[in-house]
Length: 256
Image 1 (cartoon, rainbow, N blue to C red):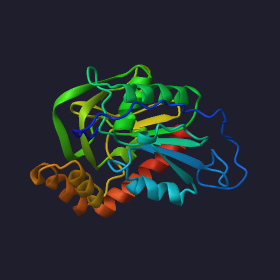
Image 2 (image 1 turned 90 degrees about the vertical axis):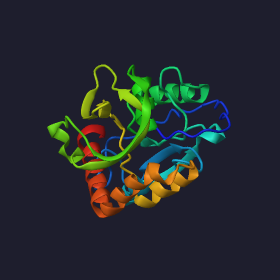
Image 3 (image 1 turned 180 degrees about the horizontal axis):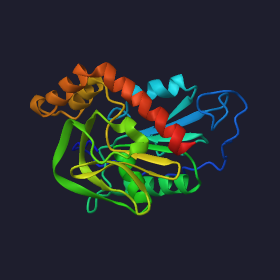
């Protein structure tokens, strides 16, 4: 989670879930065989203007043939029907003692989406929401963790999680009971799956430009983000390629 200070956000009246279900039977050949390539649609939930850039995830969605609907928390959205829900970061928190009404509404919406057996990808705050929605927990850490870091305890089935990833958060996940923990950080679970839902604490979407824009938006002092930015920039192509391979693996082995 990326946290900023400022005005308290409006409480969404999340009407969220459309009752349409997606087909798992393809009618055209596609690398993502779990949906019809002519009708794949992804809904991306984010804020408007902070932590809202899709980066490498957006490139992957485009290459995979997804039409993307952007919905914004500030608009109190209802989620349209879709084959995939992607939830990005937020200045809000779902940590114990810090969770505000907008985040509680989002937790319930994600619970409904996931229990309906719909594919879900949560990144950073989106992973934290998924954990809380399914009985896990999130706690506030003493300090914000920003690093280009390797993950520990990687599930051999998902070796694509190996390598260094951009990590930026101050809330730590304990994955839900019964979930498969795919990787860890020293202080938190870093990747987990429950059925067709995946939560990733690392920002696999980040480019160095996204890091810089985000840091500028939340008015961070230069010395608090420059190291992460420089590490991502020095590994830009590798980070992009590994993000793509990881998404391919997750949706081939976990979500479809």
